[in-house]
Image 1 (tube, rainbow, N blue to C red):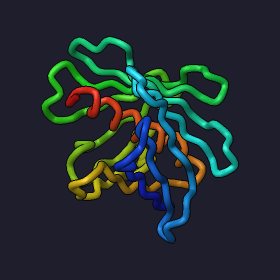
Image 2: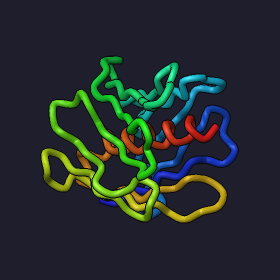
Image 3: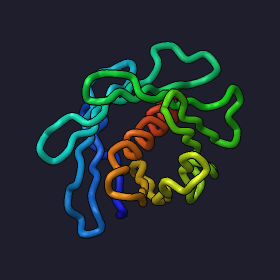
Image 4: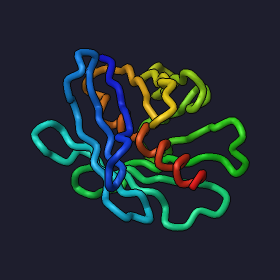
Length: 160
C-alpha cells in the first residue's frame, strides 16, 4: 500500500497528513505546540494513539529520536552518525534489525528488516514543506510512518 506523508505548512506543533492514493486520510500525525523535543503522535482514524515520537533533549554530535508504543514504552531509537554527510540513519532497540538502505533525503531509500525489503521511501519534491511517499504492507505502515517522522524530526532539529 502507498501512503503520502506531508508536513502541514501552517500547523502549531508540526502536524502531518497521511493520505492514500485516493487522497483519503489513513492516519493522523499531530505534534505538541512549543515542544523542545518535537513530540509527535501517530493516531489511527478512530483517534487511538499508536506511536509517540520525540527527539533526544540534548544532541551534541549524534542526533537521536525515540519511538514509543501506545503504552509509552520505548520500542526503538532512530539515530544518525557522528558526521552524517551521507544522511545515514539507524534504527536500534527493535527486536528486528532495521536499516535504511540509501539516502533518506535523496529521491528514494529502502527500509530493510533483517535484510529483507520492509518498505520504500520516496521523497516528493516540494518547495513548501517536506513530503514523502511510503510504500509497504498495510500492517507495517504505522511503525514505518513513525520512523519517517522520527528521521524528519532529527533533520529539522539539526537544521534549526
